[in-house]
Length: 281
Image 1 (cartoon, rainbow, N blue to C red):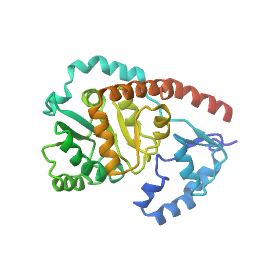
Image 2 (cartoon, one colour):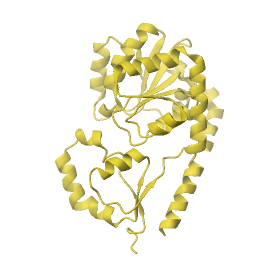
Image 3 (spheres, helix red, strand yellow):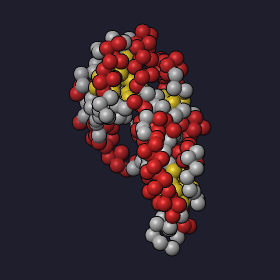
Image 4 (cartoon, one colour):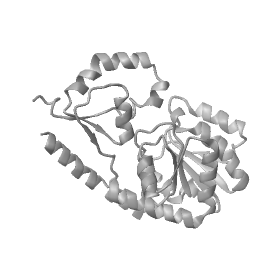
């Protein structure tokens, strides 16, 4: 067998999922897949998906599939534990001028249309009416100039004093953001997986995500977060529910971290890949 035939080919992360294709030139995509990509897919001994939903949407395009391998992304827990030791040196709130009594609602992802900011910002405008100490932190790079649209949302809902942009943050600064926040939100239209979600859960941050986020079934099954439709009212209720109920927040924290350690540890994920590749060979 050739090298291509014996490999497990990963699909391009989320690129063949329904929502992203709505925003792209479907005709160009179909031509590329038909002329080039189908040959690679047809020759692969297996296709790797991170979640079941990614596989389902792949099959909707009637693409070749000899065998599917569903293995999620993994988190290097040892690396993250080393960051925890250094957190005393980083004060996320002080760096961005956030008072200690403020409740941080953290959005950590690219500023992109598919991330659901068109729902999050109007929802947050309602959240602060009942939770005036809430602050929305948008931590992510400006993707395809979408920040201009976000700025318009913020102006429309008069939220300039309630929203903080940090730009893209990585490494210890990202961990400090998780550590100092009160809730993590990702109301996406579509996510093939949702890596930032498991990072937030590992650091004991209650998560509110939409059903469009790939790992939402795992979170629902483990009661490790709140999963909603991409709906403004549901998002408002979920955020307020977590911010006003410390007992619930701590319970979600505990189950979220437990889920990451049992299902998404990089060591366990690596073992699964080794097993699958050995079987293919």
